[in-house]
Length: 330
Image 1 (cartoon, rainbow, N blue to C red):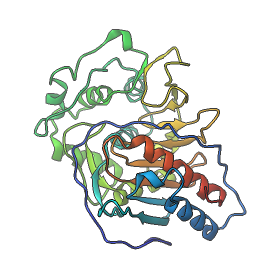
Image 2 (cartoon, helix red, strand yellow):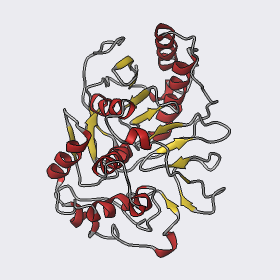
Image 3 (cartoon, rainbow, N blue to C red):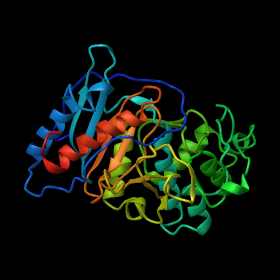
Image 4 (cartoon, rainbow, N blue to C red):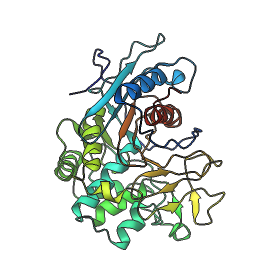
């Protein structure tokens, strides 16, 4: 149960799954302010989310949530005069590239926390399988890899960071998931994440096919924080650089050229030396933005559905996170 929430009417948003992105936001490093109380943090985060003049104003309507390893602490549904849609913790939506973090967590769990060199190669997007486009809904994972250019290997990209769903799709076939369709895939992934509630695949795409809610995703993040999922200990480990402008081992990244993040086992490390705060995240193309702060104390989510919404959701999510950690509205 939420310790503090803004109650609203539930609504459901349905769209097709696809890939995701990073952020063009600016944010100073936000270390946790130890003197701030939960009440102060709730007030600061709520004011930031509801502001009509900051980076959260343009992304309305959306749902936001912040919590710790035990439960959600604060949340809210921010409405828009221009839209009747209301997003809540229970709203179901395609989370696009936020799916990547879930698949990586599955692999880490299945491996007992000890990944192979090949696992890192694929999950850090350095495998050379960089031509993935999409899957058909009724396919198996292996059939998806065989579709069009999805399974094409580019030797020049092997060992280079290239943000593309092909790495995870190919990895899944090598990991024994090739014969699985959407239903079987969801059952298998949930078996390791311990997920209950709706978590399905709208296409058998490990990097972008999940359809779920903030409630289900938040439960996974809490398990990372409390150590129930081994991904919690793996956050930020074995990172690779991602900005082609500053990293000779990077070819393609969805983050702006002005920022340099790292990528680590299916999730971003927002550690740009100028504007990053070290948070771990996995933003999706339609605006679903889950994160865990650098201290691994709190998690957060911004949830909504809009084409190309990743960057704006991260802009908003970053300042909500900063408001929470500092106890000061942004």
